[in-house]
Image (cartoon, rainbow, N blue to C red; front, side):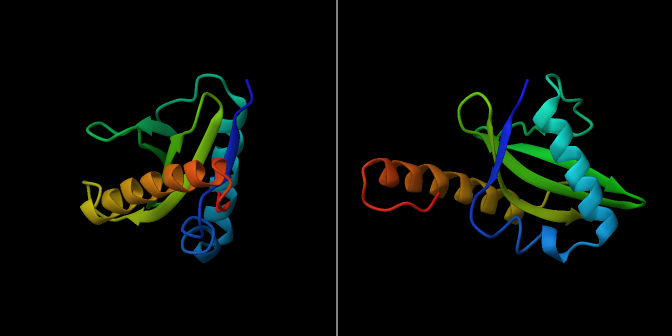
Length: 122
């Protein structure tokens, strides 16, 4: 099993990943590698978000810090990473979920436009 992982926009790399410590980046890299190569990823690392339109969260824990990275599947083996944040409360913040839904919708709009030959942003 091999899944491909891509990043949509700058939200994941610029606004989340590059802002983290080396320890967090290494753990994120480890989990992304696991998701890419393991057929059945434990829900400890990748979990479907109920009451969403196909969003998943990648779950990262480093020491006492918890991080979440939102993603979704585009076809069978393509995972699109959209945004991440440090989780400080039990519930996922609504503004983070709303941003993830917006980015997912934008991704598919951009993909459709690029397929029609107008421009490519994906």
